[in-house]
Structures are given as C-alpha cells and as structure tokens.
Amino acid sequence: MTQPSASGAAARQREVGVVLLRVLVLNVAVAGAKLVLGYSTGAVSVISDGFHSLTDSASNIMGLVGLRAARKPPDDDHPYGHRKYETLAAAGIFVFLLLVVVEVLRTALSRLSGGPPARVTGLSFMVMLVTLGINLLVVRYEAGRARALHSELLMADALHTRSDVLTSCAVLISLLAVRLGYPLLDPVGGIVVAVFIARTGLEIARETSPILADRAVLNEDGIRTVVMSVPGVVGCHQIRSRGSLDYAFLDLHVWFRGSSSLHEAHRLSHVVKDRLMQAYPHIADAIIHIEPPPAEIPQADASAPKP
Image (tube, rainbow, N blue to C red; front, side, top):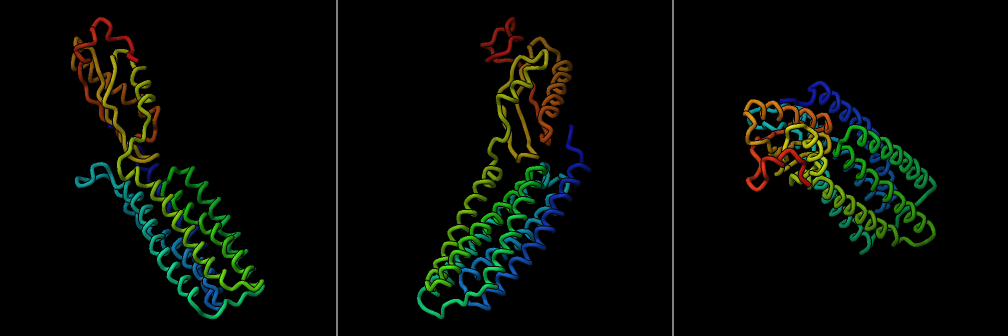
C-alpha cells in the first residue's frame, strides 16, 4: 500500500505551524492595540473590532492544537489517520465567531440605549490605520501559504482575518462619523462589525462542512480516464472519494475479463493504483476491488473502453 511520504507530511505540518505562530504574534498585537484604544476612548465599534481581532488569536491557538493532533500517524482506532482534526479546528473557528457575534451585538445594543459618546482623536485614526495595514499583510501572507500548502485551516484563518480588514474599514467610517458629530453611528458600527463576523463564519462553515460530511473530492471522469489507460482493464464503477484537497481517499471497482487469472488481475490492479497515485499525488490511499464485467457486456467487446 503506497502512502504519502511521512517526512513530507511532517514538513508540511511544520510549515503550517510556523505560519500560524507568526500570524498569532501579529494578531495579539493588533487585538491589544484595538482593545486599549477602545476602552480608553469608549468607542464601542473599536472595542467590538478588538474582540474580533482577539478571536483571530484564539483561532490561531485552536489551529495549532488541531494541527498537533493531526500529526499523529494512523493507528488501530484511526486507520485513516488524524487529518480531520485540522478540519475540525477550522470548524472550531466558526464557533468562536458565533460567540463574538453575540458579544458584539450585546455591547452595541447596550450603547444604543444610552451612555456617553466615544472620544475620537487623531490617535484613534492612526491606531486603526496601522492595524488595518498589518491585517492586509497577514491576509496576503496567510492566504498565499494556504494555497501553497493546500491547507483549509490556513485558508479559514485567512478568511477570518480578511473579515478584520472589512470591519476595520467600517470602524474607521464610524469614528469619522462620531468626529463629525454623529455619536450614534459608533454603536451602529459595532452592529456592522457583527454582520461581517457572521458572514465570515458562514464562509468558513461552507468550506469545512463538505470535508466533514465526506463530500466527493475527486472527479469521477478524471479517475475513469486514468483507470482506462491501463491495458487489460475493461472498465470501472462505484468510484468513491472523500477527504481534503491534500489528503484524499479513493475506492472503486475495476472490471477485468472473466478469463483473466486472479494473479494477472491482481497485478494489473497495482498498475492501476500506481497510475492513480501518480496522477493524483494527494491521494493518501486507493482501494481497488477486482471483479468481472457485468453480464450484459460481451466478453469479446470487453477490451473496448465504455462511454
């Protein structure tokens, strides 16, 4: 059974971990700056954005924990490995976002019902612009590494941080409105932050749920083309795949002529498997069931590829 290189998988996970650690440091700095500014000026929108950034840090920590669990090799209890723990960590970010939405809405609605207006100074704009610039750099860096490493965890985290960019823009508009004499737009900005956070949560749920629900991850026509390229193969069916972009499992039934010996059919099945794993390097394992073609297919025509 051909498996992906253990050293290659470990190196990938180490790279993902390094990215998360770097982003964690930046997120903690951004969240701290926003929260200090928000509480010192009483700006609800800034406080809400600070909590949003704080969940970026929490999701980084959760990702590191999930990544550590995902490094464990297959065992008796987890014969398919622990790769889904990384996906579960990405789904956990969604839960954090829901908690933040509730807190942000509670704070914003409370300020709408009364309370002193926020104090907006030039420092407020400076801090928000600097943290916005840092978030833009984080999104670009993390999304690029996510694509290079085929990591849904990094991509989910990048989406989370991208929402910070949008919310920071909304907060800047709210601060400008307060400076111009419209203090109620501060808590309104907090509500806008909650909407952005909720939208990001839905995007993350949409990315992770198909993997957890074992949605097909490989194209059947592409698999069939590779299988039929092996001389002696009559056809295939019941092609099933699941997993993630970088760690997929495949099983299928391959037809051989009824006159083929078991030894020959078994040999050819290994050729099929080798070609599949060469064409799709992200396949962790492929299980092939050997069987004769259906009775309605004439043996004389069995060697012809079926549409």
